[in-house]
Length: 124
Image (tube, rainbow, N blue to C red):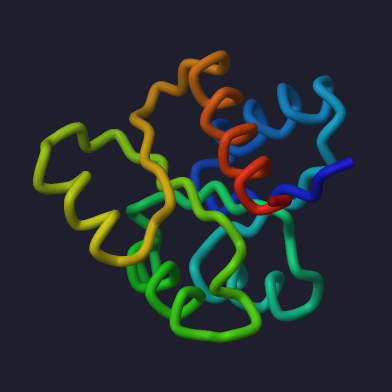
């Protein structure tokens, strides 16, 4: 069972994602902001992180930069999720170190495909 960390400040979005992923056999934890996301990763290293780009304290891109700069966490795949669908937002996510990017509202089949690709890459 893969451990997924959702870093998302919108309760409705995080609960919906959590339910859908749990039904598909994933173990899910939720962090409501960037700092609690960093603390959660420090406590238990997840297999994959779903990172909201816009968070109330430090944004998801800064959290991604910090995680990718740390030798202990840089191998954890991060998929940035955002309602921002502009090409420059996608570019900023990848520049921060994101492994993939998806837009909200989430298409669950597409997201699962991206998650499986990242988890498969991590395993090899």
